[in-house]
Amino acid sequence: MAVPDVAVVIGRSREYLYGGLREGRFPGVKFGRAWGIPRQFVRDFVAEVVELGLVVDFEEYAESWRALRTMQRAA
Image (cartoon, rainbow, N blue to C red; front, side, top):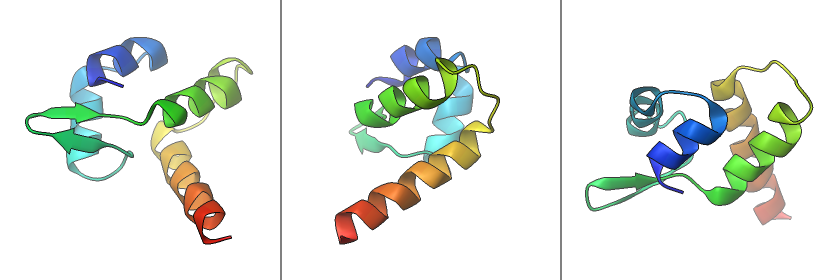
């Protein structure tokens, strides 16, 4: 998903997301000059955190999500 779209969905600024992507704190991929964040990551975050009304640190969630995906791929 495009960063501006993700910013609206999760309620964070585009600058915060771009900074996190550049520093490797969030999953993402760069296509030329544009960044994208995996749609599944956003869906999981919304389903597991936003819809349940949980309070979590976005960066910690991203780290946990990556670790889980890595374990699933290895299995």
